[in-house]
Amino acid sequence: MAKLAARYERKGLADVYAALQPVVQQGGTLRGEDLPALIAQLGVGEEAVRKTLSRMMVRFRQEMEYAVRLTVEDSAAVGEELAYLRGLFAQ
Image (cartoon, rainbow, N blue to C red):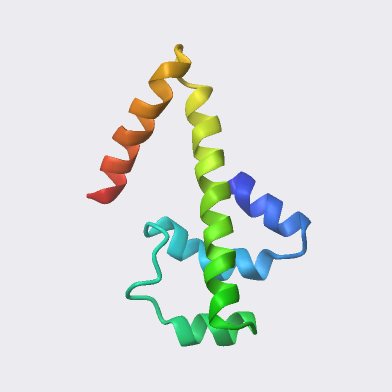
């Protein structure tokens, strides 16, 4: 998450990262989240919040995949390792 945070900070979007980071860490769904509060906090509409979260999730997945690639010997094992990690986070 540190690389993702740094990316958003470099772009002057640290406030966006701070608002959406808890959602990303909880799996990236807005179900159960206080969407009106996020809209007010970010000062944008619902569609913008959803698109921004979607983009953040894509970047998060890319960062996770990159980190896993550094830890496995065979690139074919990346998918298996990511599936294992998703299982851990789902618990």
